[in-house]
Image (cartoon, rainbow, N blue to C red; front, side, top):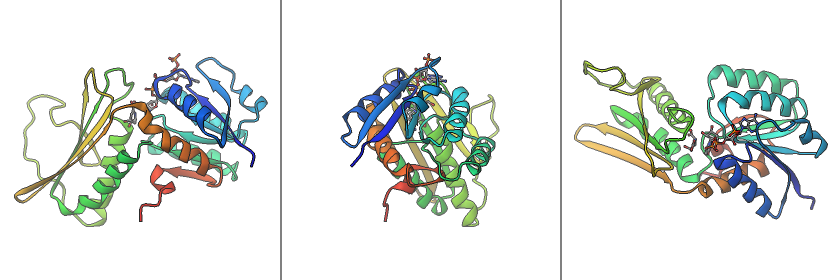
Length: 250
Ligand SMILES: NC(=O)C1=CN([C@@H]2O[C@H](COP(=O)(O)OP(=O)(O)OC[C@H]3O[C@@H](n4cnc5c(N)ncnc54)[C@H](OP(=O)(O)O)[C@@H]3O)[C@@H](O)[C@H]2O)C=CC1
Ligand SMILES: O=C(O)C1=N[C@H](C(=O)O)C[C@H](O)C1
């Protein structure tokens, strides 16, 4: 069987360099490109890349994906910064290239994906829900893409179930004391030397709380998800948001 021809964008970054090693080690893949800032995207076409793994910055990702979609190169995207407007823009460009697949994965680690799924499941049963994400201090953005996605899934589940808005009678004395409001769910960001990527989802009801916690302790935690995304995106045309769509979660 022929190997999948894969290129990594952001190849010298923290997660990109790990992805380069993971693709090189995968028996069913061939690394045909490892691009950093300033490298020519045209080299992806010259190298015959079938799938790009996009791990750059929110400022670069849209331009890179525009190029990939226009050239029929599938993409597995871990880069953050996704708004409804950006997703709409990407969907529109995919309409013109209907055989191309793009996976946006807010988090590639299986534990983080399960955290999001469990949080969505729990959301309707508790009056209160808050998300605390904790990351290394070099992270480019806050809140994390994972935390925003988690909060949105919680909010959607609560709306579908007809839940009332969360109780909160606090008068805040300082801006930011209650975190960022993501569709009615407070999201708090911690940046601390020594950490990598961590998240707690806190639920509260009458006389009880539930905490779901996930810890990524090394960038290797994201690699099985990256490789799964690469293998599956080639037969998933259009836009897929969330690695859970490629997992059998029962
Ligand atoms: N979905 C997931 O599971 C995960 C997602 N992420 C996300 O991935 C992204 C990268 O994170 P991280 O590796 O920590 O960040 P880094 O800053 O370590 O890496 C980003 C890399 O992208 C390079 N870059 C910037 N613009 C371009 C471009 N146009 N073309 C090619 N390369 C470019 C940067 O180069 P230079 O340094 O020269 O600017 C840098 O080497 C973030 O959005 C992060 O949140 C991270 C971990 C897991
Ligand atoms: O920048 C990181 O490190 C990470 N970014 C992603 C996010 O913003 O959710 C995924 C993971 O949390 C690591």
